[in-house]
Image (tube, rainbow, N blue to C red; front, side, top):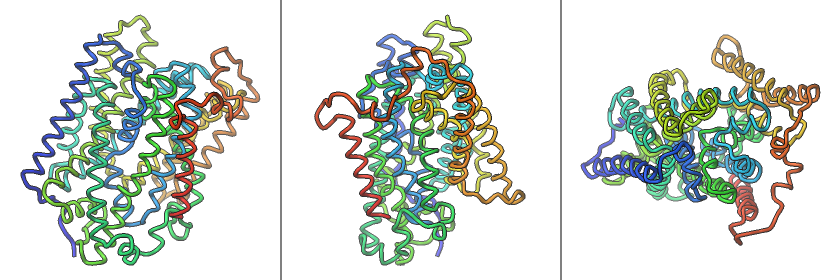
Length: 538
């Protein structure tokens, strides 16, 4: 039995959606008004005046990361593959610990506004320019493009709105408060959106879990292997367990520790303690998506097999089917608002990072005497231009057969050279500017070649899973960096020498402060919790 996916909604649902849209745009504009009272400056616009505390940083990190891709595509993966793709959520927690312990301190101590700026301090200007351009491209094509298209598909499936119309409306609404309010507006709206996102997703999970008969009912309705998170190559060819442990750290370190769109919230921290605790708080929240986004898809499979839920015409529609058939009036509107929150938070975060990268890494260095207010104006113009570019690119995402696996593949081919340059840069003093420059240029070119081999795999015969390909690319990039660095040694400045750990233990030395809220204690607790979860679900 198949079902249509247009939602059957009543006026209370539309009222909830309207209140959300008016409230979130209003909050963004209120943040702009608060910033104006403190006299506008580029620091206020791009980094919220370095005033962010760990709760806001953690919520904003989570909200920027989670998009409609997660809500819809992870539910689809749960319906088709069970819990396996939950690895992309739980493995992220370990990389957030790495961000807190090893990268955030250097970012705050070096007082950088962007990650390309950090690369210039550690290596040279060429590295900064390369990363700035690559980061802008990735923000437009990955963070915004995929999110807008997926969100538009959801709105079409739920409300029958045309895809292109949805892309334009959401982009304009989100761009309005992002252009005007800057990072402060972004993180304030993201904090609220995170709460709405979790509440809306929890409604689907709880009602579905009760309907399927709890864990016992679910276990009886689906294959046992679907309840495990680590699989063999024969069970899940696209994501065997070894590719998770070899491949995810590569893409995860780029995404969580070296991607401007994500890390900009940490750069806006009030101090080093806030910058360390924020990612750890986000790490605890990242435990939830496996249950909030992946498990509902698996529950839907159980309900379909029990005859309690109609099968969707397409597995991508499973989330809409659950909303339409399980939720009462009012809650449908809340979940629809959660979907919009996921979409808008990702887009706003990426737009702000693009403005920061272009204005501070490119324009300001070209014209260093530019007044503060003009820098803010330029940032707003760039935000608008990036929004238009994303609107034009988003429909082309339809060329990918699977949205979630498509975005993973793109990240796998972009991240290896950046991960190598950052990782070796903070842990190996001999990593040189020449080595980093060669790694970024050659590694990016090699990643582009592999991307096309994968894109045209019907003709090329390419059959290496993207998660393994990213590991092989990282090994090659590391070899390039080490060989060139040994042949062309780094001549450290006083500043660059301070941006390398003499040993990993150096990052955790010092007095314990703030009791249980010491970052080392929080890191240890988070690590143990994640190990236990993997043991339980493996």
